[in-house]
Structures are given as structure tokens and as C-alpha cells.
Amino acid sequence: MSNDSTCPECGRSNLYLSKDISSGGGYAPNYLPGLGSFLSSAKFRVVVCVDCGLTRFFASKKALDKLPESNEWNKL
Image 1 (cartoon, rainbow, N blue to C red):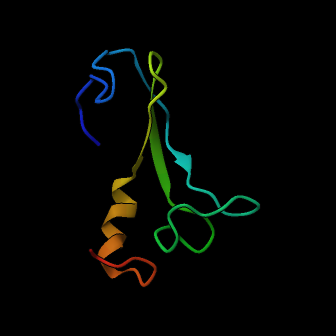
Image 2: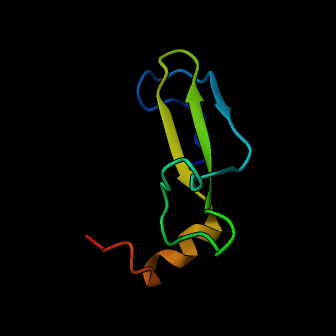
């Protein structure tokens, strides 16, 4: 996740960052399949710009570390 505190859409700096949240599972879709553990889905943080509404999701470091070995994802 970038430490840049300026919105890439509108250029303003009225951004809010969530705490770690689940990427889904259970009754919700799993947005990071294969990157969590057996009992819990992977985590990510969300950044929202209050001025324009741009919302960005950033996978956790732990999820990113599993990405190259996951069968659910293909490198482009």
C-alpha cells in the first residue's frame, strides 16, 4: 500500500484508512481466494477519499506473500 496521502483521482488529501478487514468468505464472496488460511479469509485495508469517493483495496502483506504459490491466481 502506498504511503501517498493524495487521492490519485481528484488530487485532494481527505483520505481515510480502515483497519484490517476480512476479504470475504462465509456468506460473502471471497475477494482474495487462496490467500487466507483454512479458518479465515485473507485481510486487506481500504482507503476511501471523502471528496470524490474513490475506494481502493490493498491486500495485506501476509496475503501477498502467498500469491506466487497460489493455484487461484495466474501471473499476467
